[in-house]
Length: 194
Image (cartoon, rainbow, N blue to C red; front, top):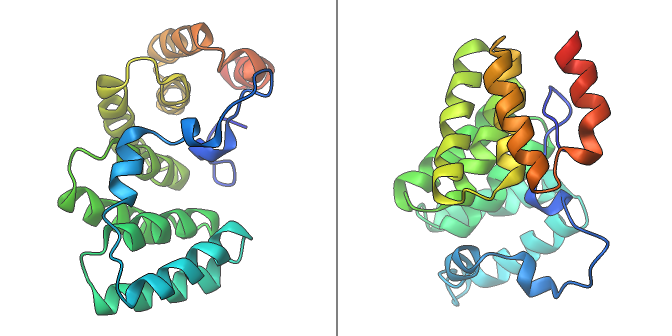
């Protein structure tokens, strides 16, 4: 599912093309791989590994507790901020998620995926100002990764929420070139025509 709403957010992990055999390492961007390599290898790493395991099995509350503990030991631990922000999205604690991704982006302003996840959290709040901010974040991602069809599709949905139909349609059309909108076309048309 690639459309956004109060209970319909997207993760980069949610999208996979099942028509091709893909090496799992190829699903992680080089930027994310480099980012993850910054995770400390000391005693915090034990907590980190445990928190990641809870994250993988969907125990987001437990993962948040451990990531929070890591951040009390190392306030600038970018890995903990990144994953705790994702946990907050899954727990529908969008304001907390926005705070974590904003802090992460203060530490690593070039981290594109941070903008993507913060945009998801912002658009889920569905207030005018947060949707405008989500559009700014999605635009940042698209500027860095012009073929990011998911961000195009979601920015289009945000434009639709702001009643900017022509901008929404343009983004939807571009995302279709990357195979994103095709499987969501029925939802998009339903929302677009309402």
